[in-house]
Amino acid sequence: MDYQIKSVKFLKSEVDYKKCPADRLPEVAFIGRSNVGKSSLINTLANHKDLAKTSSKPGKTQTMHHYEVDKRWYLVDLPGYGYASISKSMREKWEKMIDNYLRYRKNLQSVFVLVDIRLEPQELDINFINKLGEMGMPFSLVFTKADKIGKNKGAVSVRNFCRKLMETWEDLPPFFVCSSVDGRGKQELLDYIDQINEYSYNQKKQEKE
Ligand code: GDP
Image (cartoon, rainbow, N blue to C red; front, side):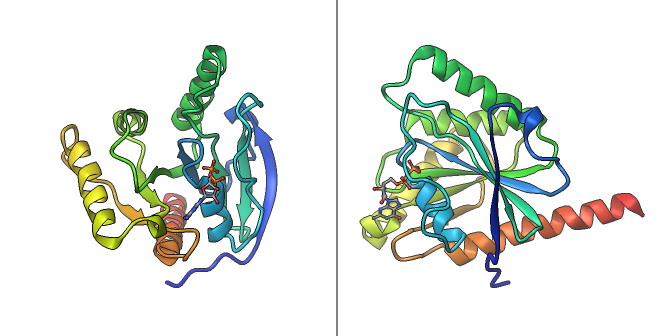
């Protein structure tokens, strides 16, 4: 517990899951609508100012960024969805890339879906979450920008989102309420990632025995 990231090394930007770094370490991935606060959250988790570049421009090739953390796990920054100005062919490319990555990346343990806490449940987010659920991919929700909204309003927003999910799913995923401005949620998220990695290492050990 109280896990803190000590070292982060950028490894690679890729569009093809087959060319991602060797799958020898467990990995978790972050995704969400553009502008949701993904880069800020990754920088906050890593105690870094500009590890993940904030707001990559729509229209540019969208790539998956791999970082090696503490020589123990990979953090993956997946390109965001929901750019208004993106072309249909780019959207299709994105879908294919993400779909392949989610289906075939063997060492992927869990996906963190970021959602802006101030918004009503958005169809794009719900669709993406439903897809993860259908794939059987473990995921969690990260409500971002919690400093921008009062505690009560935030709680209502989270409840609304959970209600929406319960229209489709029986079980709710773990969720975290975070802010990159005041740092709330950071320790819980880091400890959860640490647990995921610990579990993955234990599984591997058992397989060997
Ligand atoms: P990305 O496109 O998902 O990577 O989003 P960014 O991290 O670039 O953030 C988009 C905008 O939201 C930027 O102007 C950030 O400064 C702002 N932002 C991100 N996270 C937070 C947060 O937790 N609180 C507040 N108040 N602003 C945030």
